[in-house]
Length: 147
Image (cartoon, rainbow, N blue to C red):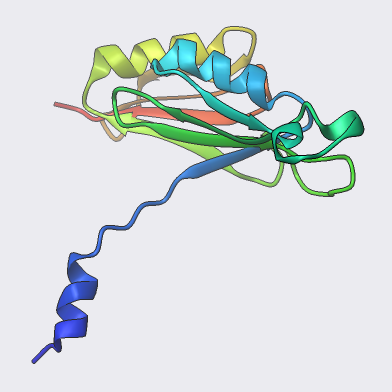
């Protein structure tokens, strides 16, 4: 028999959100993704929190909530911080679902200024799948489920 704490835990909502890091391109990236997915980026800069100097104009936290439910968060790493940015570090994002028109549109829009590594086309497993690297170095996949 489960305890009340277990039941409350099972009913809790949990999310995993993509958080991308850049070196001075976070605002540009969020505006680009807003053109692709819709929505209006919200951007807080390091200077808004009192930082001065070269890092003041960098994005401390940016967020895009698209009408489809896609959420992207992004930040610029300040000069004193080390870390992977863009598509570095072996991370890629994958859009997937059965709305073929929307997913093809996202794939095509994300490829603008980027590099398509695998065209979006039917695969042996029956779905359409493709991969690209966008203009900011972020790796994307798109998988359209077979109907």
